[in-house]
Structures are given as structure tokens and as C-alpha cells.
Image 1 (cartoon, chains in turn yellow, orange):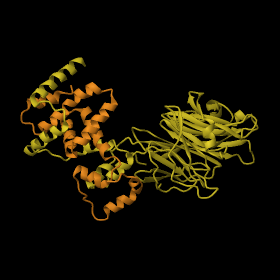
Image 2: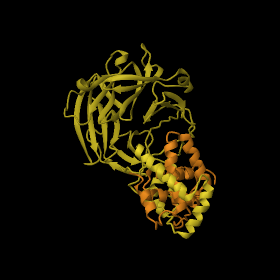
Image 3: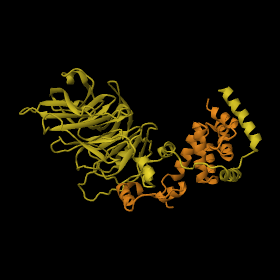
Length: 378
Length: 126
């Protein structure tokens, strides 16, 4: 390293001696111009260099760049393009094929939608390129009582996995529930059902996420257990070989009585945002906490300060929350206000006011996180 | 060794790829880099100076020169500078910056504007 820098200095000194001191760029400019007329320089940037420049732009600028001319449009639309955007504005997005009130899961540029009626219509799309694909229906009962949707995209191969955890009450038995895990592989384009099991005293819900090859989903007590046992977590390794005793093998208790739990994948780790319930009345929310799962242990990361909790106004015992990378978003269903927690800086702040306004009292709002990527296709 | 091409450049008299003027902008850069590598503020100021004093065409030449000289840091720096110059600017501004003209068929451009309408919100005034 030392050798290199001394060679550089030697080389630079020589240059400076040859061309004289050039500290001012305007001087340099004049020199440059007169030289340029004498020597022809191809001023058209080759595609790869143009791509380099565009890669530094936020996504909106990249999309607009496609309108500059045909060549730029080609480059922006080509599949081999990749970038790293910083989105700091609200945009009015038009999402393809989305029906209101459907299940949404996202991972690395792709968003999966599952309809809320039959819970069998599944679409995967890239909201930026607007390419979408309807998937073949998952197997199992068409009308399950509860369904949880999750998607995971492999960043290198772009192959994606979708899981649907279906729960159906065993007829005539409130206590027992049929649980089935269905997995879709985008490479084989096929569904497999590695596990079906009857849970006693627990049912599945609609909260699930895949982190690092493990499917996590929340389960809810159907018995009269203590408040801290109202919720539970199942951690199912997607490459598992076992096909039974899921409840026994993979159950992880939650850290405290929860009113609701929201699961998300933050940099490959499972994070849960939970409404903290009162000890004697677990259906009343008294705070919101954030926990990280380390192995089978929960680590408390933060609790929402009271002033933010109050800032939501009416706060139900259930709320929406999602996150990606270092940021967690929390939102009351009753209003489009969005609270952000930065995992890195351990800071809470309100996001910029969303342009959506509440038009009538019972209007509900919900959002989801996704990572805009141009190069991933469903 | 990243300065192989630089040495080669000086040895090669008939080099049309990089004008002398451009080389003198690119070559002092590593010296500056070494001096102020850890100092982001100074690099930002350097970038502002560059944008103020150097015409867009010159920036393009700088990029080509840095690419030819196989000088990754300078290439990344100039590309980022250009990106910052055109970020959030209108399509017309970007065209003027690069000296380009629209070659779309009539109606094609409108179609794109409609399709990506969301990305045209809040763009800087020209």
C-alpha cells in the first residue's frame, strides 16, 4: 500500500510538472475544450456506463429516464438491470390486479396477493414493472377458515417460494383444527403439501413470514389458557423432512400477553411487533413492543413511547405493521398515519403525511412494505 | 495494480481516447482521494465544485476517461456526480444535459408518461 501511494505521488508530481499546476477547473476547462476540437472523442456513453449512472438514481428518476429516448428506454427496461433506490416520497401507485381486502406478502421486489374469498386465487407481481402472473391454485380445501400467505425470493437465482398455511376447524369440534402447509416453488411451478396435522387447542391465523428458509406463523389458542398463552409461534424449516408433530417440535411461546402480533423479515431475522395486552384483560392494548427472535429466544428491542401511542388517537387492539431492512412501520387501521421505528438508530418518528385522506368513519387503511426492484420477474 | 493504465497512457504518445485536459482532471483525483478519503464533506464540496465548473459534456468525457484508465474510484465518483445532477429533474432537463433528443414515435412518449405517471410527481422545476 505504501509502495503504491509513493508511486502515485511520483507519477502525479511528474504530471504536474508536465502540465503545470491545475487547481482551478475553469482553467482546465478551457484547456480541455481547445484540446477537444483537435482530437475527436466519442461522447456517447456506452450502455454499461449509462447503467452505472442510472444505478445511483432513486427509482422514480430511473423510471422517468426510460422516457428520455428509445435507447434509454431499452436500458431501463432490460432484465439485467439492477439498482439501489432510496424512496423518500409517497407515490400514488396503481397496483395491478389487486382487489381490496386481500392477503399480501412481499419479498425482494415481488408481491404476492391472495384473494380473501376463496383464498385460492394467487397472483405474484412486480409492482414497478407491472408484470404479474396468476399461479395455479394451491391444493387443499378451497375455503379454509384462516389462511396465511408468505413469499420468499432468492436474491441470486430469483427463484421464489410461496407458502400458504391453511387452518380449518374440524367439523363439530371447536378445539381441534386441521392445519396444512402448502409450498409453491417458482422453478417447478408446483405446489407440495409437506405437512398436514390436527392441532389440539390451537388454530392458525393470517400472519406468517419466511426468514432465511424458515416459515414462521402465529397460532392462536382455542382453549381457555392463560393470557400469555393466547398466542404462539411455529417455526417450520422449509427444508424439513418431518411431516408430523409440528406443534410439539416447533412451538415457541411469545414473550408476554399479546393483543395481536405482526411478523416481518428484517435482514433475514424474524421480528415481531406485538400489541401488549393487560395481564388480566389481554384483549385491551396498553402498549406496543418490538421483539427479535434469536434462535428460540425473544429479545426485546423497543417499546413504543407513550406519546406516539397516544398520537394515533383511537388505537385498536389490532393494527397493521410491516417492515423491511432496518425500518418498521406501524399503522392504526383507523387512520393513514404511519409511525416508523429505525432498528439501527433505535429511533421513533412519524413518516411524511400520506396523501390519502380518510373519507368516511369506517374506512380502513392498510399498507405493506416492498422493496422496489426492476430486475425480478414473477 | 490500478495505475497500470495510467503509466501505459503516458508511454503511449498517440492516445486519442483521453484528451490531455481530461487526464489532468482525472489523475489528480487519486491524490485528492488519498488525502480526503475519510472526509465525506470534502468530497461533497469537491463534487459541487465539479458540477459548477465543468460542463455536462466534460463530465461525460471524465467518465469515459476514468473508464479507459480503469480507475474505479474516479468512475464511481463521476457517475454518482452525474446521477446527483440529474436526480429528480425533468425528462427535458436530462435530455439537455446529455445533448439527446427524443426519438419516440408520436404518442409513444405520452403512453410512457401515463404508465409511469407516479414517477412524474414532484419533479424539480426546470
